[in-house]
Image (tube, rainbow, N blue to C red):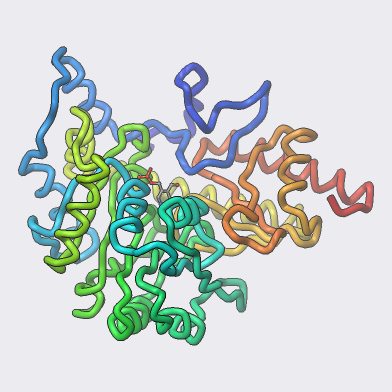
Length: 391
Ligand SMILES: Cc1ncc(COP(=O)(O)O)c(C=O)c1O
């Protein structure tokens, strides 16, 4: 293989949040990958670092061109230059937008279980969380449109944060589903922030659908957050974009991110994004193939050897969302005990608004580490079985 995703890279000593662990613990929690980024990205950063003056930096035309080109070529969505603004991150944009676009105590809809930081972005900025819970049927989640309409039609509801594709369950929302969301949002005057940070890590043969592309209504109601950080494993660079076709909403978002001072790039932010979107395609397709093999391997392993755990199959992200209800109804205790007894550190599903019997496992690591992690999961499951106890 041209890129060596099997290579184990020691991340200790880099102040990695994920690897802030004890002893020989295996961290399979926070969403970054244990793979090196695309060679073009590290080269571009090294080239920029070689110039020893790191002053204030403007956003070059190439930055707009790189985003527009990538979304046109890979996602068949024609974004215009004037729709795009730089922001240091997706969460900074979302938090800013919540404060700017809602008045205190207005409702913001999220579709739980969902990326837990959405709760913080809403609550820390004086708004209320309104949960439109996803419904589980036939091994996969879908949206409850009846409930969504009820919640959107509440005059106190002004905003929705959509996760497209969805973290943690890995669903790629269909064009039809997204059209329905847009149509309801348009009818009830709700702005939709579409967080598309996971859009490029899909199983081979699967494509996500940009929310803003599905209809005129979607274009009018949407604020879309995009970035190369998950895709190319450069979260620490802090670089993203926000795309807002509607000029009135765009002005508000522009004021929001500038008031919060998150609209200016570091001297590496644009460089890294440009290199990723211009030259990272081949690397990304190899990465997707590797992550897909990891997913197949993990699903097979769990199905065969830990039948009490049910993996919810998804076609996007490098995260596995799994129902541990056969072993425990207290995911917090399960994760705490597993970390202590088996040295495996995964995310507790309850923080995403799960029902207390889910875990999220990050599988973006070399296969040997994944294998060791799964063996530890199995060992812990056996311990529970042997004691015939629920944690
Ligand atoms: C759905 C989602 N949105 C946003 C983020 C974080 O984005 P940023 O680092 O750009 O703030 C993550 C990180 O895991 C995520 O999963």
